[in-house]
Each structure stands twice: as C-alpha cells, then as structure tokens.
Length: 593
Image (cartoon, rainbow, N blue to C red; front, side):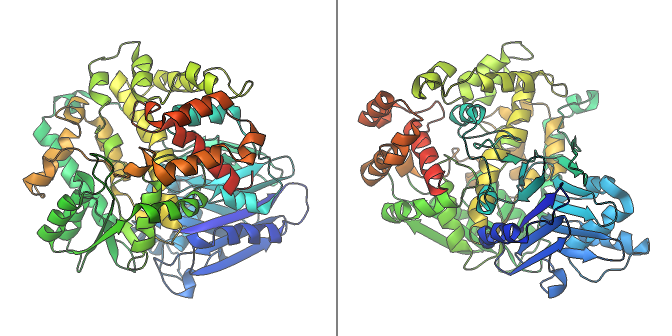
C-alpha cells in the first residue's frame, strides 16, 4: 500500500521532477517508509512506500528492470504473487526481490496486459516500457485502489490522491456541474471518470489507459461484473449456495493474510467483520488484534456496538482494543479528516474511520475490514421492494425513490441559479440499468451499487482514512471471485430474510448464533446525523463564511431555512442535507479552492 505519482510530457520537454516531488510530498502519509523518484526524459515517476511485502530495500520503488526495459510504480497488494512468482521462475525469469511489485513487472513482460486477469488483489499502477515510450495506467477490478489524473495537449499527470495533483499546480479547479448533481443525489458519490473538479478525472475501476508518447490515450475496460446465471445456478438450493459462499470467503480471507507483517481486524461487532475474525482465527492467525470504536450516544441512538464486538473477541480470544471517542475529540479531528479526503465524502463514519485508523496504526500496519458485504450480498433495506419488481420497466423510478438523497427539483431549488443542470444523475442510472448483463431490477441495482456506489463511498472512505496513517486495509468481501460468485446467486437467496440471507446461513457454521441473528447495525456516529451544539455551530460557520458567500453555490434563503430546523432536512437514507452542503464547502476551503 503506497502512493504513486508522475508526469508524462507530449511536447518533447523534460518531465517536471519538481512537480512530481510535490505530489509525492502531498501523499507522504500513504507511504511513510520511503520515497523514490525516477525521471526518463519526458517521463517522471514518483512513489511513497508503505512496507508490507519485502521489507528490505530491494522492494524500493520506482522499481526498474533494465534487462527487460520496464519500470513500475505500484500501490496495492497482489495476494497470489508467490504462485505467480514460481510460475515465472519456471519460465526462466530471475528475481532480485521477494515482494509482489517485481512479479507484476515480470508478468507484464511474459503475458502483456493479459497478466491483469491473473492478478488477485487490489492495485493501481503505472508501468512503462523504456523502448516504445508507452506507459500504462491500470486500476483494479473493483476500484479498491485510487488513481487520479489531469490531461491536456502537452502532458498527463497522475497521483493516488486528488490533493496530490493539486499540490503540483496548474489544475482547473472550477466545479463540475454534472459532478455537483451526482454529489447531492448519491450521498456524495461522483462516478468515474468525473470528480467534483473539472480539471481532474479518475480512472474507472477495471480500466487500463494506454498512453502513447504522442499523447494519444486509449481506455479499455478489462473487467466487468455481470449478473448472468444459467439453469444450474437458478436450480441450486440455498444450502448449496451457502457452502459455496463460505468456501469462497474462507479463501478470500486466507489470501489477504499474505504479508511480512501481522494482519489485524477492524471488528465492529456486525456480521461482516465478525465473520472475517472467525475465518482468520480458523486460519490459525496467532495473537490476532481486533479493534472497535465507539462514540457518545445522542438521544435514543447508541454510539457504540461494544456488546457484540466484545462477544466475538471473547469467543475467539483476540487481543481486543476498544477506542472510545468523546464528541469533543470528534469535532477536533474533523478538519484533519476532511483534509484526508481525496474527494468530499459525507458519510458520517468518515471521521470515525479516521480516528480508528489513527489508533490502530499504533499497533498494526495491515487490517482486514468488512466493507462491501451489504452491496455484494444484498444487505440494505431498499433491496427487498426492488426484488418484487421483477424486470419491470419502472425499476429506475423505484431505485431513485429509495436511494436518491433528493429529487432533481429539490436540488435545483437548493443550488444558486445557473448551477443546476438537467437530471444527469437520473440519466446515468437509466443508462446503467439499460446495460446488458443484468436482467431484473434487483440485479441491476446490485450491479450499480457494487461497481459504482460501493467504489466511491465505503471503499474510497476506508482507503482515504486508513492511508492517512499508513495503514493498509484489505477487503475480502471484494475478492473478485467472491463477487462474481455472488452475482450468480439468485437475488431471492440474498435479499430476503432481512438481507444477506445466504451470507448469514454461511456464517452459522463459524459464528455464535447471537451474532448472526442480531439486528442490523450501522457504524454509529450520531453526532453528525443529528446536528447539535458545537457540530451545528461548525456547519453554520462553514456555510456562512466569507468563502461560502463569495462562492455563492447555495441559495441564501434555503441555507437560512435549513439552519433553523436541521432535523427537518434528512435524506431518505437518514443523512443530513445540511451536513452534505457544509462538508462540500469545508472540503473546498481545506483544499484552497
């Protein structure tokens, strides 16, 4: 897990090493264990290293193989690299390091872009060929690792974070109106290639960009998730699917134990993280460390789930760390958590993950986390009504009603005149639902949530907040083989019975009944949902600041009305519309935009 950066020039000028160093410096938290820069005429590549595999200097990046004429800067982890390494050695390749970075390089030389299909893991990398001048930018199947870029006629710059690109300067920082529409409709999700800024894009998941020395750039989607199933899939019993899911998850967890440092668990006490803990214990992980975080309650809403995390920890004998955060500390950490965001993210648990990561990083460098299970296995409350629609044509309307934070009309009324566009979010969802590869409304919704909403909300949140402290988070529920298996399971086996039915049945083989059958919980940060006291003052100060007034993004009268009664402006998914507005403004100010 690391940070990468670079510049490719198309005008025969030397690449700007100073700009690459600035991007590196802005991403130092992602790689506290080392820094490297390699410049080759019109190309320059930078890297910040977090040492997880091959802790020696032999794993330093940028990694150059002069004999093959290839180089790479890489962020992520290839879990099956030992097997690939042995295959490549048998084919005659020699290795100077023991980690996964060199394996990518040799595999690319042996198999070209087809090597991507062999990689099991999470990754974003830039790989270049010395002789042809071609550079490839690649992102993993489910977008677990980020990759941002700016592109014009004379150069391309790329980095692991959006603020990294801002640090290099010369970026169009005007707001993208389409991205604004996405942001306020989809809980701050802005689908790739868009970001909130016009001048910065992000490489979509499962995509490879080929960059020629002339500046010609071509994009190719090298992996897509499809919900196609045959007659045998349809006829399989729940019992059979349960066994298949448990076997696939067991393998996914085992794969993510590959490291030269100990691997811990972020244990919330929910089904997903508890199941990971159980399977890691089953795999024989010694002295396993588990971590849980809690906050003060607000009204009738609890601020922690320690009861269940304690239960699981006792059952498996883990070294359990409970981190309790008072509201005052939550507010103090808020500016730093916002600064850690590559893009503005409104989820209430962003700051929770930030504080959890800070505490965990004192003891562990790698943890497994349960993100993705709700999208992959149908755990959210809006899925059962969609199941009942079959393949009806009004599926998009049903999805919007359940999922969108506000209607197009409400959004237009909130934004200042001239800011709102046509209903771009509605068109985006309609186009995604019309793609082939998913026949029913529920399958289309699960595909969209897994490949778009998950990528730019929970997954991005965990990457940004953990990497702010050089902590690597691995997500076994996003093992692509497990995700492909789940896509083949008929939706009735997933979304019924309160959601995640097949996963719950699989969990019964390894977890206490009390954990499997507990009510569904969420990572609780009630202080950011029900704005009170200091938190409401933060929102007021942000939205009434001179920078916000000068920006003029929101209608003044709408802001004033919402501030008078914050609890009256909650989204269908129980988020605060005021918090969405304030978070965006705070993020823009933090990044001096």
